Length: 145
View (cartoon, rainbow, N blue to C red):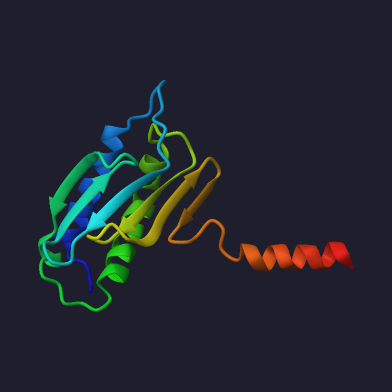
């Protein structure tokens, strides 16, 4: 699914509203994740904090009744691109680092890690602990030999 210009504007508007909710300042919020929940049936995109408090919502018309088999993969890609584009604003949010944006389906199941911000480290669309087992195994092998 290729995002329309209207869809991109709506996604960016949601990210802006989230950033407005957590402005940079003396007091920082203690959050670990911002949950973005998307419904393939209704096209609704909602953002929640860790306590399930709604931050913002909108309906993305392009996503209403989507029959795309790769719907969540496409949505994750659109969100990652928008977060990357707005990374300066996203990284400047008044949230204690590290924090991340995660994509969930309408059943609240984790779909994708979209963006992780941790001081000098930013991971877009990946897992912070990716290949950790391999790294630890190689390190143990090196130590034991």
